[in-house]
Length: 252
Image 1 (spheres, helix red, strand yellow):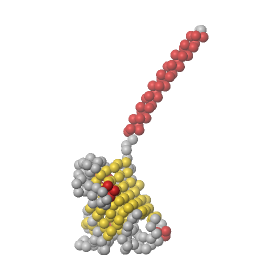
Image 2 (tube, rainbow, N blue to C red):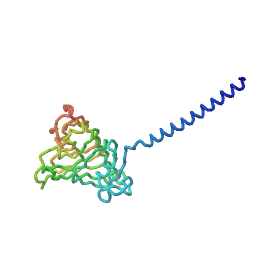
Image 3 (cartoon, one colour):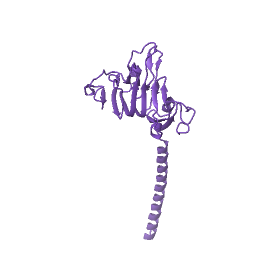
Image 4 (cartoon, rainbow, N blue to C red):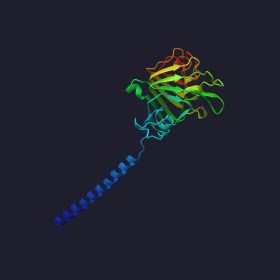
């Protein structure tokens, strides 16, 4: 076989190899792109307006908000982050279950129009005939909540029968004691004004076995709020003496 013939065969083989490589690369790139596209987006941003919203809306635009927090949270993947732009005051009459990993409730109008929406939890008679406070209740192994640019208005017990006697279930943010979940609860408050009725019964955060990480920045609390920060902590306790709670507040 002549040298020219051998070179021609080598060039042909090389061209075949290049063609095969290019074909495989194209297939691999397509498969990778499809795999990436198939990964679900876990972060969701919703608009909620209890006054003018509708849970039949798309919920993801200012013009078509949901009515309830429940709808926004349940429309978010369990492992995901749910950011809720709150457009109006919101009254809690029953517990709102939270299964997503990170919940943000942001007072949208506090920034756009200077009107800060109010969160207004109410007491209700539970199925076990105890009086509880409607709240955010966390069930996920990974549970975090952030309240930003909202006011929290804690209610009066006047007229409640029977009178509430369990601080944890009368807390605005609470864990699921039945399963001791979550193991760690993260709570962040930013630019929040907390007010309460003089006879308010309960706490800001209610925990059982969970460890609590509580951060408060730009938050205003009532002057007599001691003992009402965390359901398991008495008034005036130094936070650096606690094994179950870590916080930037000096005393609780």
